[in-house]
Image (cartoon, rainbow, N blue to C red):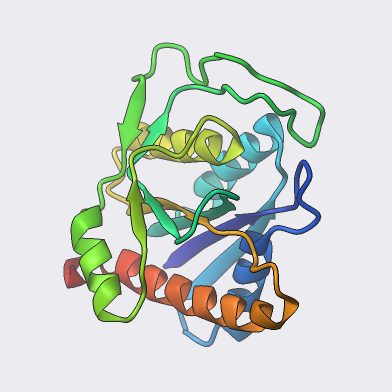
Length: 201
């Protein structure tokens, strides 16, 4: 069985994206016998959307965890809902700006993860991880792939656990970067373990 973990490349004014570094750190340290597919996605509506659908089709993962950067976040955010909407004032890395555009015509306005986020938040707190619950993943590329993934899983009738998590930016002090990366990599490992075995909640 396969697990899928994704992050994003840098974008906009961000010269680096911690979600990229976190997933690559997980990939480098992965020791489980279970296959983990790690991908760093382009910050492009078309490219990222196609990539996540292709990965689901090819890998048929039994759990999906996607990470992205939210520069306003103080703590990691567990995203409850993905909107069927692209609406951001900044262009993607391909130069495309989308304002008020539907992702999938005829699809629901919003789709919700099947994971009990309150139970997950409590579980993570018990493991020493502070996280917040956010009611939707915005309307930029992070939300775009979350909606595409949830929509495709719904089409397939697959009960695959699927979650998007926004991580904060790196601390401004360089001395805090290593601790930040270690802390968030530990969080992601625990999230993968729960998504792979949701009965533990």
